[in-house]
Image (cartoon, rainbow, N blue to C red):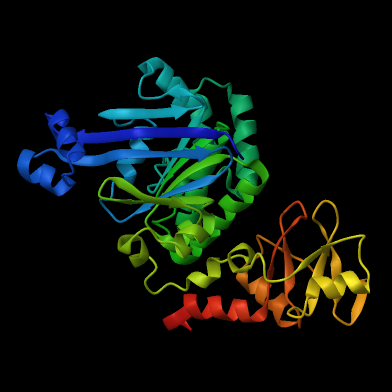
Length: 386
């Protein structure tokens, strides 16, 4: 998940008859409100830059009017940019010809909207196959591909039903199936689940996360709901007044909110639920020893009066176990993966009298966690929510 699929550079959109005047004012430090007051030009998006990596769910978040829907429409060029670039796989979408853009939208980019936009007179199968039909795929092949996707979203038994015979959540699954059927490398989801009730919304988030584990698509997801963003986002970009004010993982944004606007999103939310072992660990709290040079004197020297035990690492920095002040034999110790959630960490730490080692996905050591540390962070994050 390293090379960027989408690169947005200095993207601006001004709605009005003199966008250059507005851009010059913004460059001089004016706010979008001042620009509107003095010129009547509406600033939709101003000087936005970020990239979306291959295989990640990148969530665009902000209050109503923050510019997130305009930004999405600039990325697939439903709206023409005033300035800046949008590169998809290195191709500047803002500069390609209309015919090339249509081709890109049909083959490489799928959109799922808040309104299901299903065709009421067509069956679920026919709706799911519609994008392939537009792309000129033959009936037999497109129905076979649509059927496969309906199975993935749990709708195969309803293939011959009409949309009106399905619940709202199921209709949204048809919308998702239609977007997936063309096998896009980039999916854009604009408030896709926000019309659903909380239970159905969570169900659709689970469907998306399950599919993502298998298929690793690149997904741009617009949401105004912090809990949703935290739950599904690999990274989140928070927008205010047409600008991106912060980009980071859910943990980075919780731990270091860029300003009061970002912090205000967390009002009344127990953010500790989104913490992982990586956020809780300390990197130098427990002494380390390398095997095989372990005997009573080297242990005594390492522990040096302050610590009661040390972790033992092999040449690849993987945990072999631990040694104690009274026992120089290497003893087994359970490890915690860096991505483990807070609840899982608490269950493991509570049962352990000593700190536990934290390891990366490849098994290498990266830190330690103890009870006192978890308690301190929990108190800080839960505060008034406990």
